[in-house]
Length: 390
Image (cartoon, rainbow, N blue to C red; front, top):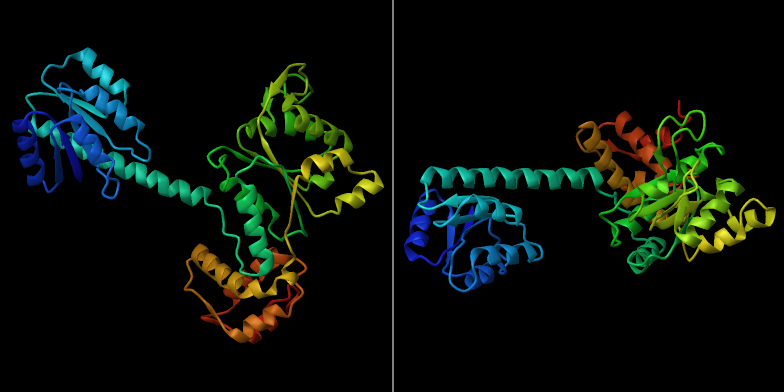
């Protein structure tokens, strides 16, 4: 571990240094708060722990602790040490964010146990961050074709704003993935991303699902329920298949977009929400407006920015990259030896129409991996790419 010691007493600094270096820790010394903060701000080599005396001339240890808490991108455990401490001092240090408090004269075993606990904490924090990344990691938007480059450019331009986005495209093209990247690259990335499949919710339940309900507001409302707008407060609400939403629900969504307030079913109380709405559809909404099945005013509210996701048939140059990505993904999931695919097999994949788009290609690659060994060749593609193979 790399440890910083901040103490105005030379004897204490040197004693701690000898103890910690004997235990194979790297030690940096600072004789006052200013030197200690300067060492911490050199972020190229971060510290794993800080020992800081409380009573020092000039800037005392409490002030140093407060300043450490305010340094961006630094999360280092600070162990406060003092020969004049009492319970009140220790409590104040812990309240201000200190990891521990040790009284002088320093006890060797206490110091080493504290450092060992710091190491365990660091490992747990790092493991938690790693697991969180695995759980929440947004899959990549694969492709180098011009349509995909345009989508990435649009995401980069729009993500930082609160502009509403309408994503269009056929089923299976990756509209949800675009929505997730808009959220991931936005200032709302640490807030909720809540998805609603408007086509999968019965019309009589859509209001309760979106806006929530109060206990007893209808027969099966046995408890209060927060709707998707409330759940997404501060984050992003993704309204997938918005073209399938009923006109009644459309009217209520329009009100929320206009007023940033929702009302739960069975309540007369307004609740303020601050949500970035991203919608998606596989329908031609202007045509739906002509038919009278979609509100024109809602369309204009949702379509501040329109991002069209092309069909796979319009970006066949991306098939080699997508195929390799799915080979990696499926083989990892199943614990299989990684397959390779021949250039001829790739060319055969490009000949298909891919009416199911990316979703269909993923299924085909999974099938090829399961039914072939080592190398996926052109004959395998011809035999197994069609779902009705015999």
